[in-house]
Length: 573
Ligand code: ATP
Ligand code: MG
Image 1 (cartoon, rainbow, N blue to C red):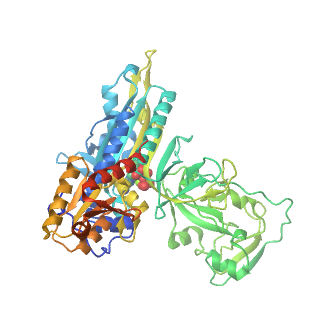
Image 2 (image 1 turned 180 degrees about the vertical axis):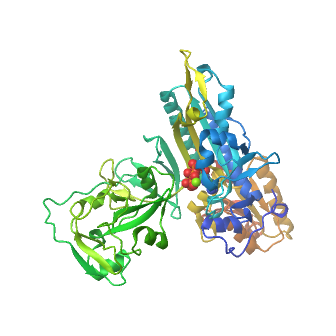
Image 3 (image 1 turned 90 degrees about the vertical axis):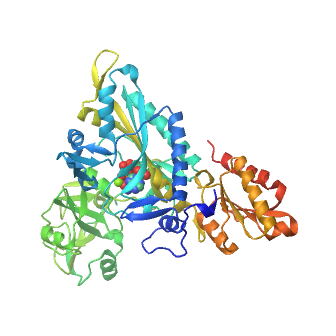
């Protein structure tokens, strides 16, 4: 396609609204434009990359035996009432009333709709297994839409749902999907890890997230350097340290700590390590206060906390709520004499003679001991794992790189089929619920994640399989007849060979063409300029390495084709 005829509104300056690199570059390279918060138009280049991801997803899903369909985006409330999620889903679900006063929502996900479809149309074990997927725009009224396509309100997702007759068949389908997902992200040319994810109340390790590794990722991935253990931080179990043997418990004392509220300030003032301090945080769990005890240098893993408490939502109380619940300002809270439900991290139960807030402004308590000075309602693993922890599987050293969740596979069991009474007749003539699985891929997020992982100061460095074009061909002097003729003939040759090419035929200065080419990040750049008239040579440059090759005009197309084919080969599975 010709640059001059495409809508590619590149920008010199980075728009102020963009915080992360993929968002900045997608705006600057003319891939997307914002319509409203978390809602974007995909311009021709952006859409091309999205379509490439979709195509890879489609091929691998079809190869694994799944069938594509397309479900409605508008979903009636009654279905969600049947599953119990109309109440549970909260404000991420965009609800509205139609002209007949019927309540509806915009689909954030499709478990209800697909289960309804299958219960009405599949009745026998002979029709199983069935695995159905779609690629569709989803709507979630995210509390903080941000980072462009990384967390939109409207975004493109591949969502798939499987229906099996037995638990063990469902396990096999899960493995097939796991395999398909590995193939998909490899074929996209991405560096990624599949990690064990929290499967909430269902239990087992039947949930995996696919994480694109990138320093700017929102999530942390826990990877063992010694064995194959890989998990997200919600799932990664923190190992307990050993308790000192027969410790001498010192008498508890109260000490003045004027204005010292933060862990660091208290530790500096008292000349103690954060490992000898226990902090007390007040959380609101489904509206109820709970005090959480944690070693000074540790952080709460909120999903672990939520699961342990068995609630739908946890959040840190603000200063006012903390004071209302505990009667003490934030910073001076402690478990001694505290009249709230208390839950302590396992590590706290291993500590002796530690420091806590005294539940009195400007005071702390020292040499406090678990069991002797206070009791708790529960102890549990509720903290974020750190690089100082060891692998829960082999004891080896852990690494904690950042990642972006692009896919999630989940063994659902019979949760939805039971709630919606979706049953079939098994080979004994018994009516039993389908065993389900669900499998998501953030298609638009995958393009953003690819950019987070692959860019430099000049712009995007697309992995070849998902680049909007494979090659950009630059005519550096459209006024020069010889150059223009050669460029036009190369363009025709490329098209004939099926090379996807963006032909920069604009009447612009070379500097602008080079800058735009780097910004857009197409993997190969072919330049027709002065060296053609002087030496009969064309320049091929690889965006990723910056390596350039000077090639005779007649050999350009074959040489380029070779480079593309071998690069595509390396992403094959
Ligand atoms: P997150 O924890 O990032 O909110 P999620 O657990 O809500 O994700 P799923 O419901 O599993 O996500 O959705 C499947 C996939 O859809 C995710 O793996 C992610 O890649 C993508 N996705 C989810 N929410 C968004 C969003 N707001 N914008 C873009 N992609 C999204
Ligand atoms: Mg979400």
